[in-house]
Image: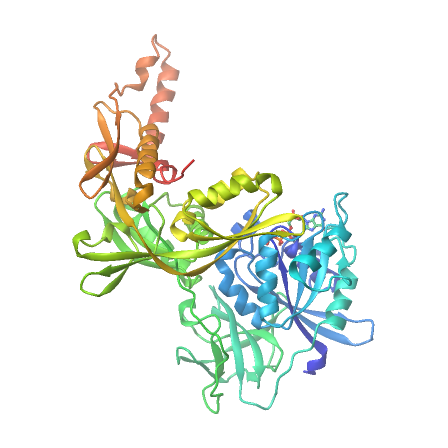
Length: 597
Ligand code: GTP
């Protein structure tokens, strides 16, 4: 393949600025997919992505475009996930292409994720073509947004292309700009094979499918291929390009992007960012910058009905086949029985996995308090990582505890700035920057990750009516005064509700939790004390008073159908309850009790 006729690019944008819609238009206009097969948001494969409108897995499409210069070009688009949890996958896919379309919603302007993603593109030395989307809307202000892109990002936006991904306006200009303004890839076809593993996923028919970008050399059907990080060797059974349907091909050369399969059993055996070469006469030098993605948020997943445990195990194993960044191990809890301790890249990742388990596999789940990974430094000089507050070692043996911190970038309209600063301060944030991105305030905070995992996004959204944008990176660990807080219901500790908190905030958290639980736990025939404690010391307490349990008592008189309805309702409610000693706690309590107002 003639390298000068290839263009590889990605699209960077803030969520909802129209990245998927633009990708669809590019595919449609070049006739890559027949009109009748076109469904909106082609690249978002999974239903759940479609429903939530978020893109999770990087994916790719090869487009053939006859340009105005009379030549036909191969355009490879790698679609990157837009959410902060998947920042590492974004950075790898960026290294697989030479240029980016920077899509900015002309009614909204630059947002936190626009910045985070465009900086990744700049880091990867991309040529960047700014695109102003949604100019069909009356509220579009292309000139103002152009100036903002120049001010805030510091790139030339004079040639920004005004488009409407919805109506198709300006799409031909985007295709021409990809050819004219983005550089062709470089690479030596005769050098040993060097390719980057960009993504991988599990296909029920083909096994693990690996998306690669060839840098140097060639990969052919029948080759023996080595993964440099793991040392594993596989054959190339199938080699194909994605249009976006798989179309078989015999060889991929420098600058090309395609997939191969070779009886790989688990997505885990394929590390995003790894270098791929031939088993014999391969390259000696891997591509720089590989790092494995590691889970940062952990929580327990338990079936509401203990009989569903085997189903849950099955479902988790299937999910993990397709998601290497999700980890799990069996866990037993005194109160919840058998379940799994699972690790996620972030909160959104956790939510997506939990949703899929409940929806695709139809299992009712109890999710325990999400926890970050603490470093417990013992007096004997050793260090252990704590993934679960229930495993906290004897406090007399602990010297100090460190927690992970993040650098959070938040952009928000002026009128909500005060509320956002207060929220960050309340969550133990330390302000590092407060500047203006054009006319909008931009603030950077150093925050403990543990204060963000519960409900920070939700709170941020609600105090700013949805106008704030947020992005974060992990920065490192820092020592702080952290303690384990336990919750006792009817004098029994409910380990699924125990959590690590900062000592200064323990009373407040404890009080909020017991008050919430008092509202969430239905009354029983006896009095129930609900307490929060640190070590043996109770720091907050509420008492749920007793009541008669017979729900039909309140329908005096003899309306039998109403009585039956009430009993049925009570029965249905019971299904989602768990028994703790003598007390029944509804499933929602586990999530709701953790949210702070
Ligand atoms: P994520 O996949 O969540 O990152 O979002 P995205 O950036 O891919 O945005 P998407 O393409 O899903 O578009 C978001 C919303 O904006 C959808 O409801 C689109 O229909 C709408 N939209 C996209 N482009 C245009 C446009 O040019 N004009 C108008 N009016 N609406 C648009």
